[in-house]
Amino acid sequence: MTMDTKQIEYMLMIAEENNITRAAQKLFITQPALNLQLLRLEKELGTQLFHRSRTDWRPTEAGEIYLENARKMLQIKRDTYRRIGDMVEDKKGQLSVGFTPGRGSSMFSVVYPRFHREYPEITVSPRELSVHTQQKLIASGELDIGFMTLCDSQRTSDTYIPIAREEIFLVLPGDHPLSARSQEMPKDGRYPTLDIAAVQSEPFVLMYRESTIRQMVDSLFEEAGFTPNVLFETSNTGTILTMIRSRLCCGLIPAYYLRDRPEGVACFRLPSRPTWEITASHRKNSYLTHSAARFVELAAEYWKS
Image (cartoon, rainbow, N blue to C red; front, side, top):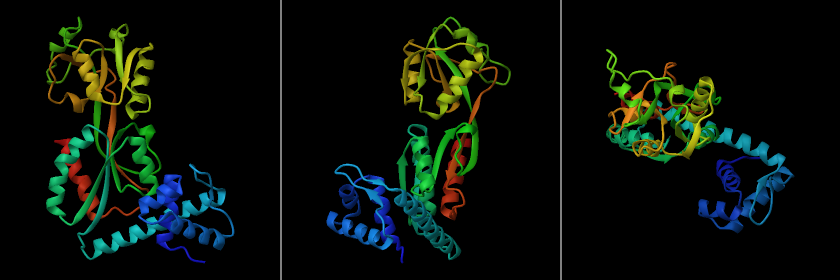
């Protein structure tokens, strides 16, 4: 009984697409050819690997076992090639990099040119993804490294490389009655402090509930003893800033988006100084190549600059 990597890739693609026709298209082979590969494997194993329907192919219990171990075998192959490549100082290969929309894209546009000068023969595949999607793809071995911001409790069992901690700020419209306090700059040059309870009667625009920052934001309201009046939920921090400038609401925003001291808003630190972490993540127990480690170093320089 054999388990070759080409066959593994075929089965994993069927599982990823939940459809044999789409999987065949992605693999650039015909659907009958892919189906023949599957039937041969199922005959060899003596059991079905997928429940079939016209639009939805789901793994059977045996299929789940096969896929779990297939992913492990592919990861072993990747790690083996990467270790040997590093040993012989081979600066060729591929690197898949995930990052969140907005800040992640900005980071990549600065870091990639520097990385490419050092590793011109490494093909980088950038992917703009949510934190949860990055975590899923890292766990399955489909993403080499992912850059994300999250709370400690949101970490998975994979490896996380700390880059920086980032503070979350309370932001009000520039003409809000309390905005005058933002001019009372402390001696350290940072924003003054204001308790979030002082604006509990105001509407808020927040990041959507599935975002990693929302867990922290909700806990801040809970600690302050009130439920916010949520005017709107969004997936874009820039949208929150725009709506605050338009005098529609208040918001809680990470320091990155306030680094240029935006006009039309008043910024305050919170008494508890809440922070979350900017990290780079890769699969647990997987080998991080020299080139991947260098990409992380360059990203860390960007975040800390």
